[in-house]
Image 1 (cartoon, rainbow, N blue to C red):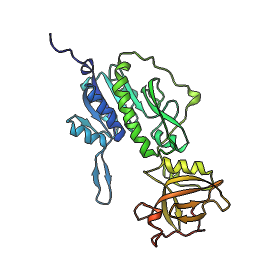
Image 2: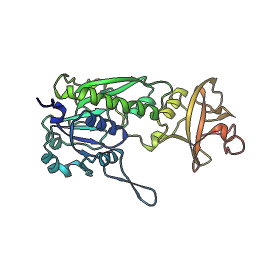
Image 3: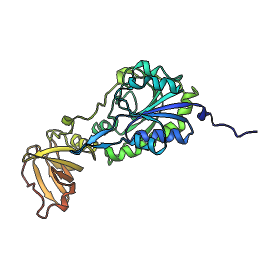
Image 4: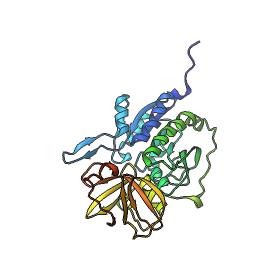
Length: 318
């Protein structure tokens, strides 16, 4: 008798994704021995004055694993290629493009999306950032059926994780990367075998997590300290929450709450010490331990106070 064939090997998958988190879904597909016949990711970006080409993490991974890849500006451009591949299913994770119905209907099974929130909360492109910004204590990942409307399809299953008080977007991304791997490796086969009953989302509980815009990054000190701290956590390490001081941008990181009531105008630098900058808000002062002044490197305040700190006590951050 020959060796028993892994049933996953019989399923031809086209994977669609672009950033680092998507590579964990693709890695799980490969390690589960799915037949990944192609990868689709966003076109290359260009960086700096020299317009250097920046490959996405998924493209780099596809090249490393010698997988056929496509980078259409719009996915309809490769419709014929996708039809010719005759896939059993599409699997997507943070792809970054709208997939029209004429493409979704190509595979036998349809399209399964890996989404980094507990749907119906936080549909959209930045669910991890907004979960922290909004002070959530739990998040997770879902396997869901992709439909025409953004992140609105029925959910097959989910895995839940706690958001710790010390988590930033950077630390939570690392945890979510592993969760994405686990749900694809452990549960996708059960989805394909119809072991999970898809559950329609409760439209009355829908919220959205649209991509972070420049105006979302600016700190308004005339808010409660907890909200400001959550914004700083939710935008750390990239792109970074910022304020302005003497016409320069200053990004703030590593923020703690204090029990010191704010008796100064919101945004006032109440105290500068080795501990950091103590800044007034609407209710209690916050303590910011790391900053990055425009044009300079990120540093702990304690490393800057011996003559290299341009900021002064009683000045106002706006």
